[in-house]
Image (tube, rainbow, N blue to C red; front, side):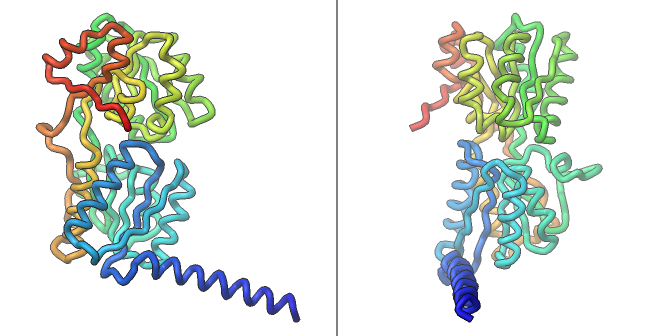
Length: 328
């Protein structure tokens, strides 16, 4: 009898905590938005902050956020968005491809906005993607012109005969970028070699192998590479092999240069889309995926790494590059 009473008290406590969590999330706000961020690294952090700032600017105290981090696990993202569905949040923001896929699999009804997604057709397995996902999904893309990034390798490392593609094999959008950049470089007579890694266990080994066998490396907008960018740098720094990166965060840790979007601005644009949806001013099923205008793309360089490799930073600035600010 005593054991039964204890069990009942425990169950009641669990239910009370669950109810408290749900109410404290909203604090009486009119809308509750669930944020599932795949992992913690500068690009995704900036996108989430931009999203929250935009929605807060538009809705003020009428919006509350339930912000969760998947710690680099698609399974954890699935658990997070499952909780959002149970709580019946008004909208889900999925930051990075694994979070978007998890949200798509969790609900066909709650509006889902992706951000930090390179190519929605690839991420969601859509054939003949025309820019509008349809249904309950839309969002923003972090795709920068891949031909221009590829040309950057040629311009900045003109002696390079062999370029290695360093990326996580578990990320389909990384494979998409690598394919496009490889096609461009091959067309210019440059030999391309793929160096896919599976995750934390082999990223440094693969990076070292790539640096040993190539004249330059390219790293796309890859979440796993972004998470371990410092480790990549620590592995290849002594090998003096330049890296061109797909975005500023990776470049700031291990690259010489990038043509990058601003992830805070990307998240802000996503938040503006969310505000329109929540206020009933837009139908997500007809909202096209939004891309950063080319005039807002930025050519950035890593001053410290460029100088260590003997790259003329004054010449870079003359070509329109600006230095990446050191993280505080």
